[in-house]
Image (cartoon, rainbow, N blue to C red):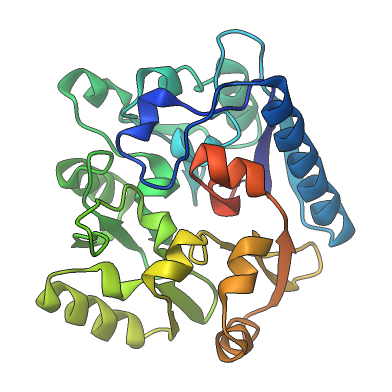
Length: 293
């Protein structure tokens, strides 16, 4: 099951731009919101068409939340009714946390809450499944360190939820910090997408690749593909047990035929155009999807 937020005030968020090299500035306008809404609704139609279970909440009018379409940063769920609430760097993103959604999650069985949000008072952050790539079966949590992803909080997450951590630094060749792990890594059923060339420390890179190679067929993507959001994807199964990779059309077009062949060992690629959301929000399809496991 996926949870999504239909945007009402989508636009460039100045409070997140300093730590997200993928965002592009623009004056807020009704046109940007209109285009984002069209892209969102096309995604919902795609999910309906392929029987992928989901629930949609409308964004609220107040306060204005330009990044509300990215709910995976403020909460995640885990097995045995676990709900995790996360501390976020940008003050206006903290307003995305909604009591009505938390109540819904409680009512649907997520009764055990791990609340890490108080760490915002200490300027420590861990932004959900943006910061973390979770292998819920093997119980590994992967994270690249950044302003938005603090290792001390990962340690607490792993202790409280029963994960083992794998941590590394990641930067572009120009030294720009990769702000979220999910723009450079995604785990499917038997396939893992990884932008390992952005890991500058050779020992960290080799250690990660050797570890992943034990469990997955690897699709290694380069910096250009990462900038096209090739790794910002999510593997899901529908009501009939069929597997799908959800991604943007921009991401899909960046893959080579051989890479697509490997991905499709896991499931069919489903792509939808979200150019506006990618350009002005600095995130792609995976960021729009919160998983209810």
